[in-house]
Length: 283
Image 1 (cartoon, one colour):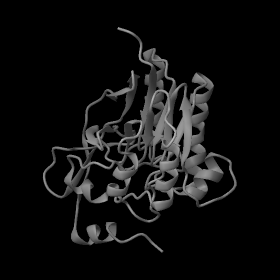
Image 2: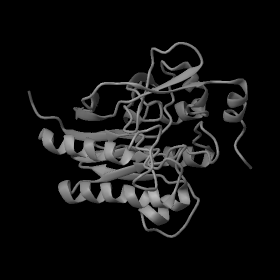
Image 3: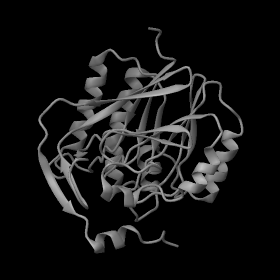
């Protein structure tokens, strides 16, 4: 079989903590990320690019981004390929820019265009500060429309933390992308060949505007899609995705890290929590 046109590595929901002794429900998220990178390095895969689909830090801490920067440097030194970074609801724009990118402080949305050969990757910012759900907003959708007005030779991959499609964990469906109708109108009939996301902490596939959507497994921990009711069941389990592009067709594969899964938390979805989640964006 012919080699893929491009091979990308999608890494989602690292939730890096600010200090080496910090744990997230008992999980050492920085160790999980390093284990994923070591697995990729030992696999023989030759990636053309890396994509991080948001929730880089667990709570937007500057120290978390500085630790995350060590992993980005490791990737760049090992592979010398583009590394695309999206923001999620656990991130914060200003420390992301200053501590990780070493750019001047700004709270503006982080979106950019990254090229991998003839393939275009567009990073979108769905972060709504202080809220768990995501939103693109009129200005960013206009910017996206302008970008998509020029077609890329091998098509376009969109990267965003919050997926536009509902999934198998019902509680999560309250906190996905909000302005889906406007997003649909913006991308329908364009050269977009795939949408890559995170947020849901388990591999999930769907279709949106005639385009495949893939939400990859999380690095930090997994959610159990078989758990009934309005509850999150968090379990150990870490993974990443291999994305192959062949003739403008996106194929995604989930790679779960070896190990036994065990429950680490069960969180009821209460009326007060839903009310807090669904508050309108701050003015």
